[in-house]
Each structure stands twice: as C-alpha cells, then as structure tokens.
Length: 384
Image (cartoon, rainbow, N blue to C red):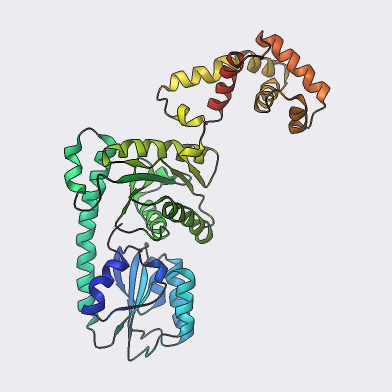
C-alpha cells in the first residue's frame, strides 16, 4: 500500500524526533509525495495523498491553521507535519481535535530539525517504495492473468507477502471509471486508497481492467469487514457526488488462487454496479454466483430469452404485463395473494392472467422441472 505514515514514523521518531499527536487512525495512509506549504492557496493543486510540511510562517493563528487542515482534508492529503518553534510554538488542541475527528495524521518535528534534509530523505523513500510497489502490482496482475505461471509472480511477492496464506480481493468502481483520463482516475484512486484505513503492507491497491483492485493477504474476517465497510462509509461522506460500487470475492488459500479470488470479486462488483448497490459480497449472491461464472454470453442470452419468448411477444402485441406477473408468481412460490399484494392488483385479475400464462406456455407450472428454466431466465435478465 505504498510508503505510509507508519513507515515514516519507524525511522522518523529517532532521526527527526517526529511525533504523531493527532489523527492517529490515519497511520496507514500512504504518501505520494511531500509538499512544503506556507500558503493555503497552493493546496488547490493537490492530487491526493501528499504529505504537507509547514514551518507555520503563513499559519501562525489557530484560525489559519484550521483553514490549512480543512484545505488538506478537501484535497485528500495524507497528513501534515508542523515544524514547531518560531511560528507555531505549540499546536492548539482545537487543531489536534480536528485532525482526530477526520483521521488526518498530524505530526510535529522540533525547530532545530533541518526540514529540507528531512523532506529530501522521506521523498527518496517514497520514490523507492513506489518502484517496489510497481513491481508488486505487476506480480499481482501476473497472478491474476496467468495463475499457472507461478514463476512469474511468486518470487517477486515472496519478500512482501505470505504467499502460502489467505488472499481476498475487493474490486471498486464508479460510473464511467474507464472513460476518465489517467490523471482524473489516479486522483480518484488516491482518494479511495486514503479511505482504506487500517491496512498497510498486508494489502495492495492498484487499477486494472476497468476497476480499482484491493488485494488483502491474511486479513481476518472482522478486520476485512471493517476496512471495506469503513471505506464505503468514508467515500459516501467525503465524496457524496461520487457513486461507489464494491464487490468482495471469497477468501482462498495460496497466491495460486488469486485469479479465482479476482473472478469472484469481479462477479460481485458487476452485479453491484448493475443494481447500484454500494457493497456486495460474493457469498451473498446466491444463484448469481453460478450464472456470473458462465463465460458463454450467447448461452446466457439464449437461456434468458427462449423460455419467455412467447410471453414477451404476447406482452408486446397486447400491451400486457404477463412476463412481470409470471416473475412475481414464481418469486412468491405461486401465491396468488402475495402476487396480488405485490402488484397492487385484484386477486381475480391475477388468477385470470396466470391461467392465460399457463395456456400460452402449455404448462401448469406445477413441477420444478417446469419452473426452473423460467426462474433461471429471470435471473439472467436481472444480471444486466
């Protein structure tokens, strides 16, 4: 998940007397770059995940610091380092509270620290971690595309992940994601990655095949749920105008099964997107798990059309709703009363329609063998 606030603190505590005083829940935020900041107007150019550093020369009052923090939140920054001393002798509690409330890491370094050297050091570490991350992402993509060619990905992932452990994939998308230009898509990815709290080096986040991909390694069920559902909640709160659809695949053992994890997550995110659901777990898809595994589109189209063809033609010719009536009839296990209530239609009218449907289909719809092809046809139609 990149070079994180946690990584920086490992050496920063001793080398730069760095202290995390606020926004501690953002410890896993990854850093894309460092930015020396003394003017809030510069923040409008942030792409996301930048770590801001200031001496406070332009933010010497609490009100100006509040404006800075709010601007960083709006710009989806990774965190803020304040060089305490001449301009900001002590960080106001109000600012610490604000960072805590929004999970924005707030760090301090003493005035005698040479900030330029610190920025140079951290920037180099971010850069080299970025190179490593690209290799890791390429290895995960290789595991997805060619799972049998394990020599293409196992050696690369071995130093960073428990490749014999469990893996789980979540796919994230939004409307028209693939139509975005690279810069816009990267900016959105940065923001979503910031909202994936409490996961750092046991996860990897990248863009692949029209979705953002989150690979999780040896993450427990409870932690996974908190990570994914927390991320969805934060996206909806901080980016209310951006619809998000997330599909979570099964947890499987060994990196060799990552391709299957991915395919199941893809089925879930496809269904979530088509139904405009924020979040869908593969295990909750029921019958659709089988249907989304079918790669033969022509077969699906045939099985979705042929059993209902006669009723489709009748509805089109007579401006009726026999297809909808049959769907409700099967959904409610042939209960006339339930269909009547669901369709706000008198039961006698429902009985009349069902009798005509049976005649058109030349079936009494009594046996499972008669009903299953029709039910499958409705499942297939609801996949789109």
